[in-house]
Length: 313
Image 1 (cartoon, rainbow, N blue to C red):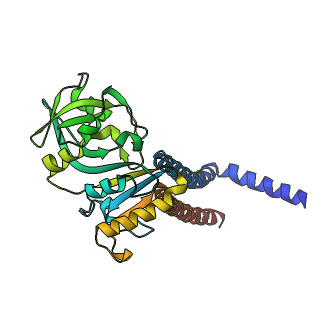
Image 2: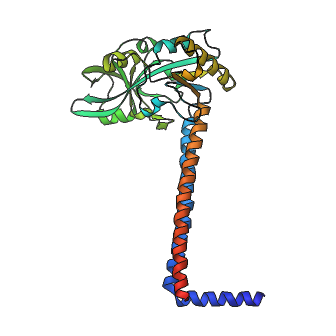
Image 3: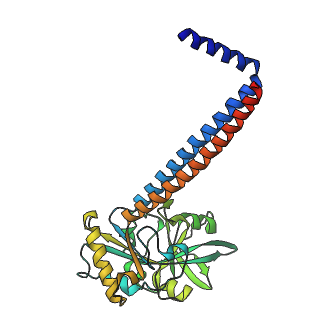
């Protein structure tokens, strides 16, 4: 039996050598197909790992509150740019007030606006992020490279002050020191008081590309609105996340006059929930791409078999 096997190998070797070009192209097609499947799976796994690490960098003790209802398997409509005006600064202040919600350590309010910022003959199109509350306590990775961050009084005021992400500062000021300079946004002046250290993509945003200003200034002077884009809440420990989330839901329903949870006009999620959601989405994408690559490999393999059969006959 072993001799027969060796004889078969000799015949195969002889056939491959006789038809070198066809053999090479056949092997090349199979190698490329298999390599494509492996590459797509590897890229998908790498992308998933990167996204999850970025989201996880926020910390496991954070709760996100967004306007608009969502089911457990999907984000609220506000994530996709739908304007929902149900979340107010008074909601954030009530959550932050000591004794109203257990285990709450820090609260930050956000309102985002897409703007064009101008300095001399240069411009930058990006996001103006209005913030109020304990920003540095919630956004743990934020560090100042130049100047300073907002004081508590400034964050609670209507002051036209700005802290720039590193990319914004480089784009608008080049090698010039931006501290004390004035930006123009929608005919309003903002004085630059600080520049952030480069941080890169973190979760769902990139602070390097942002312009930060006090919430009230962005709401009233730039956008003319009174609602929020989001609220983030830092809890004392991960063990208290679920309890705190339930209390926040009850409080917001009372404040928004909602009796039936099915009518919620807000969404309360922990960042662990966000990790689970992103994992399910990226897994589905990986499997879809792998299936497409495998199908292409199958089709290519059938074509190669046909050519080989023609060659044999």
